[in-house]
Amino acid sequence: MTKRLAILGSTGSIGTSTLDVVARFPRQFSVAALTAGGNIQRLAQQVITFRPEMVAVRDAQGAGELRRLLPPELAVEIHHGDDGFRIAASQVPADMVVVAMVGAAGLMPTLAAIDAKRDVALANKETLVMAGELVMTRVAVTGVRLLPVDSEHSAIFQCLAGNRGQDLERILLTASGGPFRQWPAERLAAVQPAQALAHPNWKMGPKITIDSATLMNKGLEVIEAVHLFAVPPERIEVLVHPQSIVHSMVAFVDGSVIAQMGVPDMRTAIAYALSYPERLPLAQPLPDWAGTPLTFEAPDVKRFPCLQLACEACRAGGTFPSVLNAANEVAVEAFLAGRLGFTDISRRVSEAIEAHQASPKADLAAILEADRWARQWTAERIGGH
Image (tube, rainbow, N blue to C red):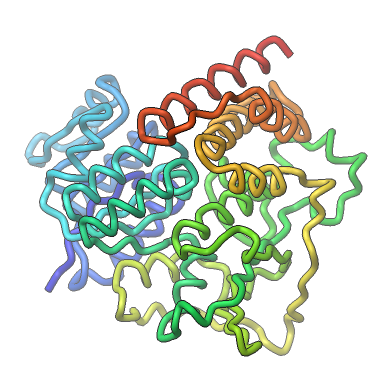
């Protein structure tokens, strides 16, 4: 039976890789809905190729542009704004919703998909960073499956398969270390966006690539793992693994360690989430075992303090992770625009966390308010230097 997919964020790195998997396995998958932000031309090409029933874009201007780019005989509903994303996630008939949107924008559509009892393939780590407890509670109540798409969390999920949860001792979360792993601290302040966007192993969108360079991405993944696998942060260890062959490992109480390995290609994790519990014949090459030494080292949180900031926000809980995430999104955007230095990203995030007055109750309203406050506070500080 063909699995119908709603793909939120179809024009980004994860979205295009998801559609590549769909194109390779047309008997297994079809596309029910697509959503995108600003890349309307790419979205138009995707609509023509995959023929979804419904499409959603960010605003009315984008909807009008998309309509002009599509053949008049192509029957497709076009929506825009938050309502459009919600409709794609929860109302268009689909078996699974792939959440590949970037940043906090993925939270509400993910909740809508869960409430509509749709299985979710989650690539949007910010959803669990902001509201992990709330999201996982709704997953348990509705009985849907939430399958991780991040390569690290997919690896952990695979390593845990067939093993008892009570036997888990530690999660070993690997990180590439980014392009500046061997740079001295004094050089980091002069890093330019083009340098930070040149990731040595992975092809990703700009925001996640910058997060990888600062190690914020790994901090967000620690928070994500806490909620996905119900483990406290002190039982998650981050290891820098420059080759990106070992995508993560799990250690058990008897000293056994299981690793999931493969070439650094997101299509492997995407395909596993789409087809679980089956595996698709992707014809991926195997790693060069003889020619690629596998090395590991501890992360340097003095040079890359974002990792430690994320872990501290995770331990603090409540609305602190939401503030961490929002401040980071604003700071990264400013860095990419040339308005903020590379090392200032962590400084602005730290300042936002220190200034935040945490809500005693981290319900959805408090989480969204913390997100709004942190964005405004950080933007004002960056604007005023």
